[in-house]
Length: 409
Ligand code: HEM
Image 1 (cartoon, rainbow, N blue to C red):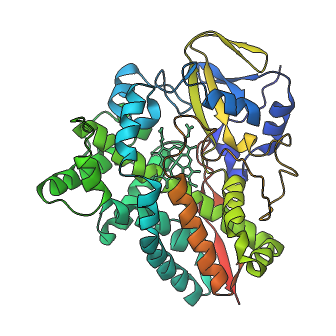
Image 2 (image 1 turned 60 degrees about the vertical axis):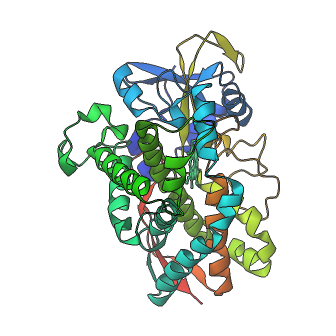
C-alpha cells in the first residue's frame, strides 16, 4: 500500500494536507502510517478521536510521549508535565492547577484581556494594517498569559522569542546552538529538544523565588502556594507547568487568531454577517477555532491490546489523533470545508476530544478571541489580505510566520 504522507513537516508549508486526511478518513478501519523507525495508527474520524480521548486507561498519555516523536525514558521523566501523565498523577496535578485556573478566575481576567486587545487593535488600525502575526496574533496571547502569570510586560518579547524557538523544534529543527542561553543540559532532555526550554525554566524558577519571597495577586503566586490538604506542586512540577502554560497559552491562541484573520479577510461575507449581528460572536469564536485547528495532533500509546474502528491495535502501538482531520469530518460537520460563523452545532475537537486532558485554557482562549472580534467589529473595520501567508514547516502546530493584512473602513 502506498503511504499517504501526513507527517512530513515541510508538507505543511502549503497548508494542512487535507486531501491526504480525507483519503485516510474515508479508508475503512485505521491506516498505519510509517514514521521514523516505527509508525502510528492515524486516527482521523471524529468518532474515533472521541473514543481515544475518552478512554485514557487504554490510550495512555504517560507511556511514551504525546508528540509524534519518541523520547528516551530519562528524557520523558524529566520533561513530564500534566499533558504527558495519566491518573492518578494526572488527576492530582490537574486538581492542583485547576484550583487557580477556574472559569471564575478566567472571567476575572477579562478586563486585562480587553486592555491589551484594545491597545493592539488601535496600533494595527493606526498603521492601516501590517503583519497580523507580529502586530496582533503573537503579542495578544503572550501578553495576556504573562499578565495573568504576573510577568512584567517588558519581558513579553523575550518569552515570544523563546516559544518561537520551541516551535522550531517541531519542524525542521532548532536554529540555536545547544549552548544558547547558557544551556548546559543535553538538549534531548529538554522539552522540544530546545535550549530555549532551559531559558524558560530559568525564568520560571526566578519568578517562583520572587513570589515565594513576596506573594502577589497572580497565577505564579497561586501555583507556588496551591495546597490541597498539604499536597503542593514540587519545584519541577511547577517549572514544567509554567513551561506548558507559556507554550500552550501562547502558540495555540496565536494560531487561532492568525487563521481567523485570514478567513475573515478572504470571506468578507462572514465578517459582514458578524458585523450585522454581533450576537454571532460566540458561534464565530468556535468556528474560528475549528477552522484554525491550531494543534494538529496529540499522540497516545495503547496500554493493552484493543480494537478501534474495527482495527486491532497491539499494546505499545502509537495512536495519533489528528484533530485537524476530525474537524473536517462530514459525518459531523455540514459542509466541513466552509467557514461559517453561523454554524451553531459545532462540536469541534480543536481543544481535544474530551476526557481528562481537555484543554485547561479553552475558556480563556475563547474569551481572548471573542474580545478581539468584539473590539474589531466595534470599530467598523474589515480586513483585507495583502499577501500569501508564510507558513511554518510543522506537523504539530498549524503555524504561520507572517501574514500581511490591511485594514479598511
Ligand atoms: C485556541 C487555543 C488553544 C487550543 C487550540 C488548545 C488546544 C489544546 C489541546 C488539543 C490540548 C490537548 C487535549 C487532549 O490531549 O485531550 C490542550 C491541552 C492543554 N491546554 Fe490548550 N489550547 C488552547 C489554548 C490554551 C490556553 C490559552 C491555555 C492556558 C493558558 C492552555 C493550556 C492547556 C493545558 C495546561 C493543557 C493540558 C491539559 C491536561 O493535560 O490536563 N491551552 N490544549
